[in-house]
Image 1 (cartoon, rainbow, N blue to C red):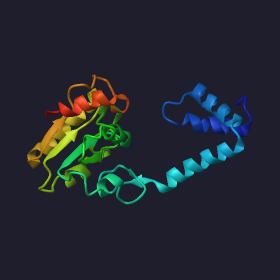
Image 2 (image 1 turned 90 degrees about the vertical axis):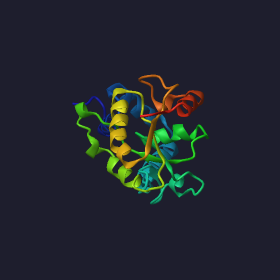
Image 3 (image 1 turned 90 degrees about the horizontal axis):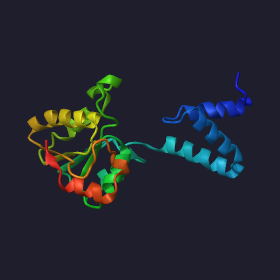
Image 4 (image 1 turned 180 degrees about the vertical axis):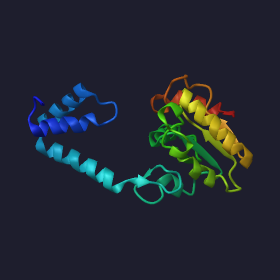
Length: 199
């Protein structure tokens, strides 16, 4: 039996369902919400609901989008012959901070991880291969994190893509092993992008 009143226990339980939030963190968040002004709580709730109802995935690159096609895919100034493959939508924000990459993106929505039961069929790889059938495609930059899963995914993609006659490169110098794109500073990420290598 919970030591908290029903509504509070329910709020804590909902916070616990979020990734990376344990029991203690869920309780801290719930108590913080109770101390917030009612208007702030309403605004927070509306932001959650609006984000969930109005956002979806771009039909082209699988990035988060308000419309059928995201702003990057709709931008005629972007290079249509280059695709940067990332694991998650947040990784696009890291690459865009460079102000150097002008191509398109493709979001896999995860990385290969056989131990966790995540295979190619669980990722947006089929959609990527369909995009690469366009004869104008010159290069795929694989920008997955330098982890076991990121490296496995990069090598798997290289084996799929090379027979299509498209150059496959991978971010190189500057990214530490075990690091994540989202936490890399601009100089490190720029160096990794400039010194990318062929797979």
